[in-house]
Image 1: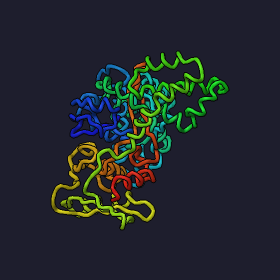
Image 2 (image 1 turned 30 degrees about the horizontal axis):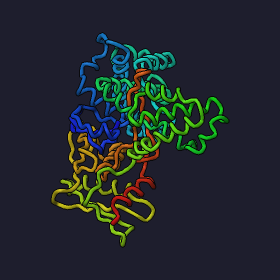
Image 3 (image 1 turned 90 degrees about the vertical axis):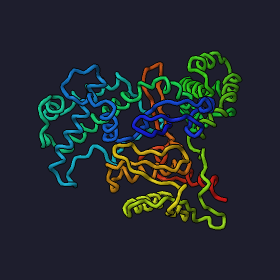
Image 4 (image 1 turned 180 degrees about the horizontal axis):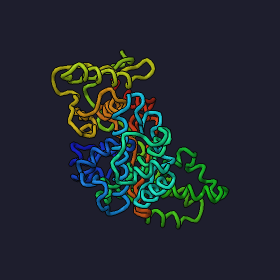
Amino acid sequence: MRVFFTSIVATILIISSFGWADSTRNNAQKIKLPHLDLDVTSQELRQLLMKQKPNLFSFGKPVSGPVEYALQIGERLLSWVDIINANRAKEDKLRLTSPQNRVSYPITAPNHYSRRTIELGLAAVKAQMPLDMRDILFGEAPLPNKNPITDEDFINFGRKVDRIYQSAARWTMLIQFKGIYIEARVDDIRGYYFLQTNGWNQNTLKNWPTIDIDTQAQIKEALIGICINARNSFARCKSKIDSVVDVTGIVNFYKLYIQKSAGVYKSFFEISNARRDIKWNKGSSFLASIPFLTPSSEEVKRYIKENIEDEYSWKSWGLKIDFINQNPAPYVVFTPGVVPHVEYIGGNKIEMDANASLDEYEVQWTIRHEFGHVLGFPDCYHEFFDEVNYEFINYQIDVNDLMCSRAGNFTQRIYDQLEASYMR
């Protein structure tokens, strides 16, 4: 689900720029949702949880279930890593995440998590973990400042625990909004994606009688998906597809819903709230510029200019930052403990965490991504709640895209959208 916030859990207004299906967007309503991109770090999740539910981290107190237990084990792991790293040189520190080992959730292999998967996942890792690490991590004794096993094994098993911790943290923060995430299923575009990438359309579907049974089942599942994009329930869509008995019915079903589904898909990528202060003339097609309120320090000024101008370039084209001393213009503020965000798509205010070092990779990626929202781009990842299996499902539509994933970069499609919206 694509949302933005103004505090840890913030009041936001759902409007067209947030990527919900049209009728949902038009029924604007005030809600409170945490803003969590799909590859948010455990440290960021930890920050949010400690503010929302500080009592979760009293290790050894009675726990109410497997999710809370996973949170306590995950917090104990993060604390242990901090203790070990306090006595190590920078190059020798244990790191559970890095740009090289980032976990992505492509649309073809989405992430599923529930109370059950969290419980089973933690039990499986505990059973496989080296005894010396397990006794400490799952025990109650004070955490030592040394690693009892090899760094390679510690990182390997630590990452597995860390992923479970992340699922438990997301579950804890999002389950209270289950009803909203159930509604968000209307934006699940996996069906459309499957049909498009596998070449199934009104012409190829005419070969229905010759298609093997397994592929027919996949196509029917995808057709249910595009039916849901038209704001029909899963039960209604399944009933409708189950009643189709011939090739004509299959083709007509596809034709009935494909355009609506295509619109939902496009909403993840199109600039929905174009700015008016970008200069990009056809006569100077190799350069565009945008004003930016001059930061108070040279360090922040350099951070803004270097990261944005480095990222927003394509072949011989580039976006230039023009610092000015008057509003209105995009600007950055630093607030301790906040998860970085832009006030709304196409907005000016970028809020960053004052506690984070500007030299860190995550912080450099973040300003590049958030500036995409300033330019009018939505997030191109999605998360919703599946009532049938009682689980959350999320995925990144293109793991190589700057607006979908922290592993992503500026792409041709971003350039094309900018050109279509801003070249005059």
